[in-house]
Length: 305
Image (tube, rainbow, N blue to C red; front, side, top):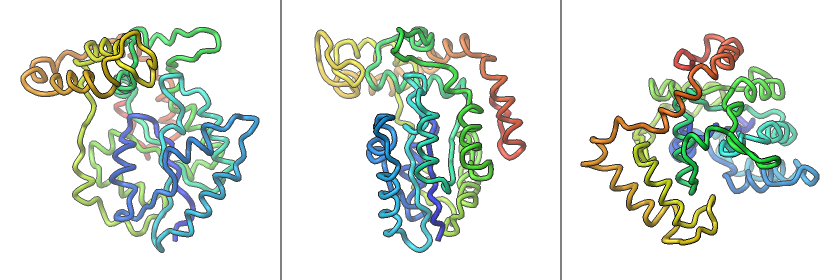
């Protein structure tokens, strides 16, 4: 039995939900032994002066007792990579906490080309009730002591390098979303070999059916304005509340804009991507070059510029 836990830290918007729901399941030789709530309670939420690695160690030990003979224990939660709305602050803290909790763990870090991931991050910000325009959000302007978006969070070589130094280079696997898109089965098989999953016999039909639930970019200007009049995580007390994001008017207008006849007419209107390309084209080149040198030919970063 592969007793070393596989710790999947994200990033956000890199097919993490697909992995949690359809890949890391007993049918594929995995069993998730902790979810977002346990990760938040025992790793992310504790104050630095109160953090105790024993709580999560004990949870892992108890959960391992229920593993099947050929199951790989998995903890998958993208909140471990830090929150992208607030600059990924404390992602290094979580890495060091994980090293205290499970120093023998194998680490999975999933990434995606920055010019593709950043529009998805903004659409997630809107989904949680955000009201800033793309230009405002990506500007990263903040007040002293109040964090905002920071491009450094997506300079992947920084966090990947830290995990390699904490756990060992051979214990860190980098999975690109591009490799999943190109050949989902091959990418999943490569991951199974990395974590010693001998029960993996290929993806089942359910795992191969990928459903994109996000609203399209062309809906962003309307959905952002709706967030001014709905209650949400990022706007707890609007002047007028006509529902709760992501439900109510948000869902109604999002659904209309996602379907015919509007979706085909507006599909080329990508206001978030336009801002991202104008602001960040070339910004991540040096980081991606360092990452390519770190990982070698094992990971294809040819789409990362």
